[in-house]
Amino acid sequence: MKQDKACNCSAGSSGIATANRPNRLKLFVTLGIGFAVWLFLYLVLQRVANSLTYDVFRLEPSSHLGSSVAFFLYDAPKVILLLAMVVFAVGIIRSFFTAERTRQILAGKRQIVGNVLAGGLGVVTPFCSCSAVPLFIGFVEAGVPLGVTFTFLIAAPMINEVALVLLIGLFGFRIGLIYVATGLAIAIVAGWVIGKLKMEKYIEGWVSEIQMAQASATAPNMTIEDRIRYGLNAVRDIVSKVWPYVLIGIGVGAAIHGYVPAGVLARFMGEGAWWSVPAAVLIGVPMYSNAAGIVPVVQALIEKGAALGTALAFMMAVIGLSLPETLILRRVLKWQLIAVFLGVVAIGITIVGFLFNAIL
Image (cartoon, rainbow, N blue to C red; front, side, top):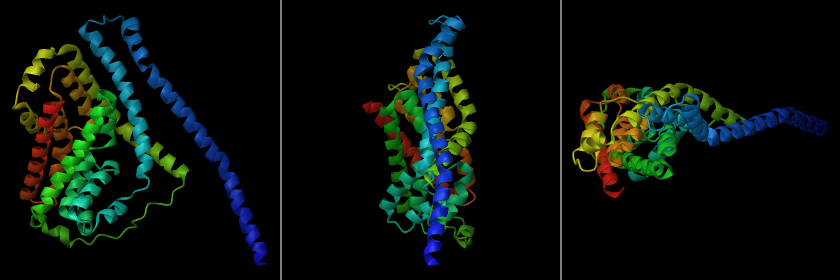
C-alpha cells in the first residue's frame, strides 16, 4: 500500500508539472517577444525622432524650437525604455529580499561592515520617503546601529534604479558608475560619522518603547515565474508613477537645451565659480524632486556650460536630502540629530562636487 501511495503521489506531481509547463512556456515566449520589441524600438528611436522633427513637423535643425523638439522626442522614449528594462531586472533582484530579511542581515554587524552592507542593500531595496519612519523604527528595534541605519536611509533614495538608468541613458556608463560609487561613499562615510558621534540620545523616547511584531525574515518561496511576474509588476507600478516626472523633467531640459544661451550657465555654474558647488547644494537641500524629474534638467544644465561636479552635487542634494523625508523623520528624531544628518551629508556632497570639477 505504501508503494501504491508513493506512485500516486509521484503521478500527481508529474501532472501538476505538465499542467504548468504550457504556462511557463507562454510566459517565456511573451518575455522574449517583449524584449525583441524593446530592442527594435530602442535602435530606431534616433531616426524616428529626427524624422518627426524635421520631416513631419518641418522644423529647422538650427532653430531653437527644432532643437528642443528633437531633444524631447528622442530622450523621453529612450529614458522610459531604459527605465522599464532596469526596473524589471532590479525587481527580480528585489524578489529575494524583504524588509525583515534586510533587518536581519544588518542587525548586530560591526560599524564599518554594517555601513558597507547597508549601502549595498539600500541600492536594491524598495524605499520612499513615506516608509522612512517604519524602516527607521524597525532597524533600531532589531538592533541595527544608528550609523548603519542612516547609511541605508541615505543610500536607498539617492542611488536607486531610476537615477542610475537616467544617468546612464543621458550621460553614459562612466558618469552613471561614478555617481553610484560616490553616492555609496557618501552614504557609508556619513553613516560611519553619525555612528561615531554616539547620538542615540537624540532619538525620540517613544521609539524605544515600541514592541514591533516579529515578521518572517525569509523571502517568500517563489519560483522563477513568480520572480519574473514580480519584475513585471515592478515595471508597471514604478513606471506608471514616474513617467509624468520623466516627461516634465525632459521637457524642462529640452527648453534649456534649445533656448538658454550656453554662456549664461557657464558664468554661474562653471568651474571658474568656486562658490557654485556649495551654493548648488544649499539650493538643492530644501527642494523636492525625484530622479525622474531632476536628471534631465541636470543634463541640459551641463550641456549649456554648467560644471559636471556642480550639477551632480545639485542633483545629489535634491534627491538625497529631500524636505519631505526630513520632515517625516522628525517624528522619530530630535532636531539635533536631523541637523547633524543634513550637515554631514551636505558636506560629503560638496566635497564630491569639488572633486568632480577637479578631475573631470
